[in-house]
Image 1: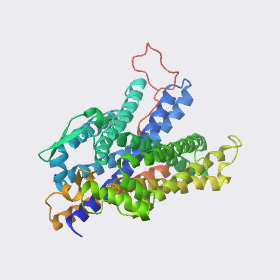
Image 2: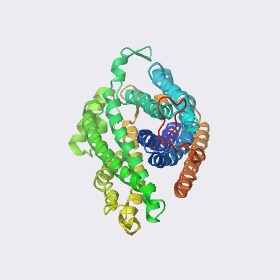
Image 3: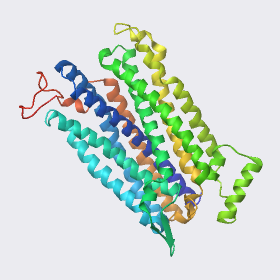
Length: 432
């Protein structure tokens, strides 16, 4: 393998693994924020306390995933400096600004708000504490937005001009409203809701099969299944809309993803050669298989993720542990969500090949002056680090998810130190 091949493989590996952290983080923080909103608005002390137990349990799992995900994200920052100096040299004036904004939002604002929230149970007034988790949620999505602004430009460059081999911004409005950004954002919002809902349902089903804390996990099984169902519909709908839009700004990717062949594919190949010069400007054919896998899984999930919620029929006294198929289904579907995410990411990123910035900068031109040995060393190092983080994340989340409420990271804090009714305005430090 040459330097370009290793650079591609390295970025594909690190970006894919990091994206799995990000997707679960985005979905879980939204679920936790909604749970805490419901708890804070509850007047009955006993019900409020029970709902806050869910916040600390699911919030603890979220914090684990976030902490390890932040570390995995550092590899992305290192890669741009180590391997992609060509990209920085030509497109740095455009890519640099959203990347810097994302770094400020994710590594400073989001982390600060999360730290205050995680250690603020019972110490910060209830409404202020609720505001913190919503600030964490908003900054998480803001971070995603800025990343997608940079990625959207690389997919469909707009609002710039090139002079002396250096690209400069001419219209930030065009860059920020890039359809390649917004179509992908809609698709991601649906996908993270789908993944978070499946995660809630799977963990809840695990405990309900064993009759563990049934009152605690019954609601989250329903919430998870319904959230996953809505997320699946949004994901598939946004995906089809996005796929149709590819015909306008990435016709070569569209042709491969749609499995076109024969004369139709040759027309696309000839049009690309006429626009960019001699050469094969089509992405590898296997990307079409990844896209089809994502599509099949998406449609399958639209049909199936609702089913675990039907296990709750029959009232609170119905023995859920006897409804094994529907509970096992919730657990079996979760890996399909992660597989669909990987296939979707491959479709978007590998589908752009051989371009780093479509029509402007090839991957070969974007790779820096790095030796094969140096690229191989960084590839091995980053891969080992990310796989280790993924393993630690899986072990910790699995362990605390199996242990259940009362044993998690945030369960050391008392979310409802006072058992009385919700405090009025006269109280200086209202609590849950």
